[in-house]
Amino acid sequence: MKPTNPTNLDLSFTLPVVKGFDYAGLKAWAEGIKSKYADVVVMEDQIIETKAEMAELNRIKKQLDTARIAAVRKVSEPIRDFEAQVKEVCAIFDATYAYLGDPVKGYEERAREEKRQEVLFAIQTLTAEAGYPGLEIPVQDSWLNKSQKPKQTAADIQAFILRHVQAEHAAAAAEQAKQDRAVAIESQNAALAQGYGFTIPVSQFLPLFTMDVALVDVNERMTSAYRLKAEANARANVAPVAAPAAQVQPTPAPAPLDQPQGTPSRKGLTLSLVYDLAREGEINMVIRHLEALCFSLTRATSCGGGFPVPTQAQAPQRECRY
Image (cartoon, rainbow, N blue to C red):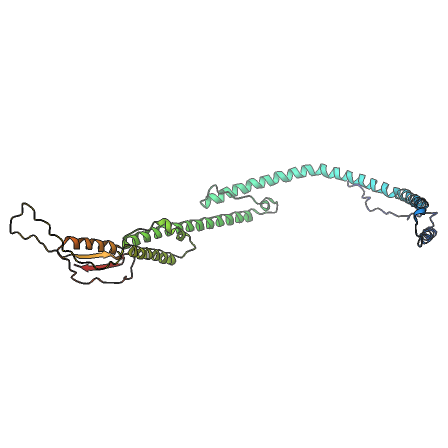
């Protein structure tokens, strides 16, 4: 049986009245004192007298303020008593609420823990069915609410698994793309090295490994790097042109001692050379060395000039016959 509710208090108030306080007369008296000193000029010989009057003014003010505090305290006593009594009753309600709340809180915590175990079992089952056993899925507070339906919780878990699968596939695709790009760059570098006859270390192309550079730009930059390197090698290997000097006929090498008398000591040889333009300087040095060793050296045809446009498997070449 519920107790009678006395909270609808039918309170009445009697406003306090302070008797014996002449506000108008007191204010007029204070204004009169103020006007009395309005035109006063304090001289040095009046300092002692002025300070005495100031002390009297301060005394009167303190007397009035003390009376005010005493009156307010006396008038407020019923209000303070009323506040203390209401707070005391409210404290009784607080204690009763806490007494009843402890078992209710314990029951709710046990219910949430049981719901948590159900959710963990659902996570374990659904992740195993999806092929991701042991996948960690954080338990959401909303899943533990009494109003939360198991079907909705299962849908939320499956959505989490789907997002994980999509993220995993995206990461795998990105990693595979990086590996494919690395293989493509290494293969392109090997093809260019074979075509040009020299190798540029792959480490010099590390900026091209980033996925921000398109493969078309990768091929163009690598081919351009090899072309510029080939042109630099060609310029470095071409010997400087010297002024023509008097031709000195080389002294024939003596015939071997065991060569029969009358056997010809000269022999002709025709060479056909196909070489890389990057090696042209070295080829020219070899030809000059042959000129010094031979009785004569005649070019059968003139050499083709210019740099042909290279492909991946073909470096610039020149063909000469001697």
